[in-house]
Structure formats: C-alpha cells, structure tokens
Amino acid sequence: MTNQVAMSTSSHVLNFISWLFGLAFFAIGVINTFWGNDPGFGVFIVLLSLVYFPPLTALFKEKTGFAIPRVIKILLGLFILWAALGVGELFDKIDLMMMDL
Image (cartoon, rainbow, N blue to C red):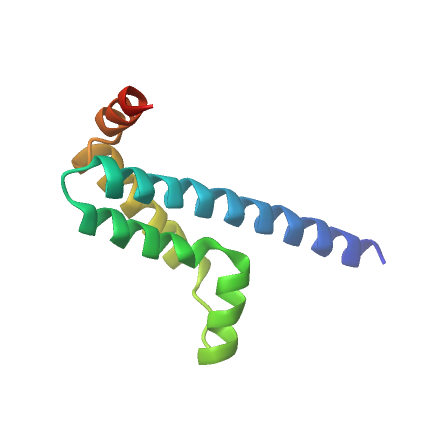
C-alpha cells in the first residue's frame, strides 16, 4: 500500500512539473509571437510547448503508441530556454509587452 501511495505522489508531482513547464513555454511562445520580430518562431515554440501538457501527451501516446521519453522533453526544454533567453531576447520582448499594457 505504501508503494502505491509513493507512486501516486510522484506521479502527481511529475504531472504538476509537466504542467508548469508547459505553461511557461507556452507563455514564452505567445510573447515571441506577438512582441517579437519573428511570429513564426513564437508559433513554433507554442507548438513545442504542447509536448509538456499531460492530456496532449496521453492523446499522442494513444494515437501513435509512442510516448515521448523524459530525456527528450528535458533536451527540448533546454533548447526552448536557450532559444528564448539567448537568441530570442525574451527579456527585451517582455519589456515591450509591458509598455503595451
């Protein structure tokens, strides 16, 4: 019984972390879409962020029979962060967004 509780708790924690990263990367994509100089890049980031949402992950696994490995999600997350912070100048775009509000 204790093992089931531990697995359930760890599953909830991983689910929460997945939602958190999905929302963060989705927000990065939206900011890049509307306040960046390359809306296509923002849409690309939004599409990549969908990998992190548990319902979409389950749907993908159901339709294809293939689950995206956690290592791939970690590498994808590092790529998104690198692209948004380094190349995409995310903080400058957030400043532009704040001036518009």
